[in-house]
Amino acid sequence: MTSPQNPAAPARVVGSTHAVLPDFDGPVCSVFAGSPAHHIADDLRAVPAAHAPLDGEVLTTRDPMAVLRHAGEVSPEAAHAVEQALHDAEIQAIDTAAPTPGAVEVLHACQAAGRPVVVSNNTADAIRSYLDTRHLTGHVADVVGRDPDDPRLMKPHPHLLATAVQRLDQAPDRCVLIGDAVTDIQATRAAGTRVIGYANRPHKPVTLADADAVVTDMHEIARAITSVTV
Image (cartoon, rainbow, N blue to C red; front, side, top):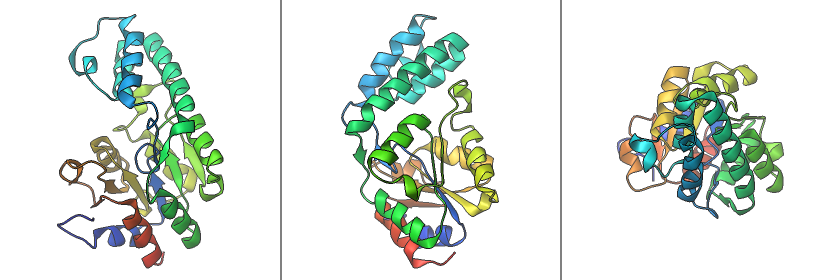
């Protein structure tokens, strides 16, 4: 299903861009399918709590990345400790990560069309491990993992996108991110790239409505890539 406001939007976005930048966790796979993310968040919470009292949303968030962002606000020591713990958890989770339906088809379509792909957002080691064990490394031009030294550079900061664009030597508006979070959209607006929202939860067509296009099935993007010429 594409955005009800504009069913042709994915093909138009793909047709006006060249490089494809899928977010790893969500559009490519469910990293913590075998070890639920909220359990990882619970484990990570104990790390910054050892450095300073926790308060606000970090006390209840089910998102490990939110715990890492909070740790970056606590102290460099807390950020480093949480980053290392999350890095290890992501590496361990790769064996049970579940491929997103349609994601492999997107990578195949990009390769057939000569479109470079950069996968980003999680720790680079986990991304490379996943691609290698699924025999997908040859479909990807580069991997841009989060900065292990500064969680403040995670999305919505445009750092990851700017790095990908620079490595590809592309104009920002010739690159399209596939993301499943509001922070992805915010990062693309700051970086100047296009964005297709992957609405993998019932509420997300609404929360991702500011994307240039919205799909609920990655196969839609694969078909859009196949249907247009660069």
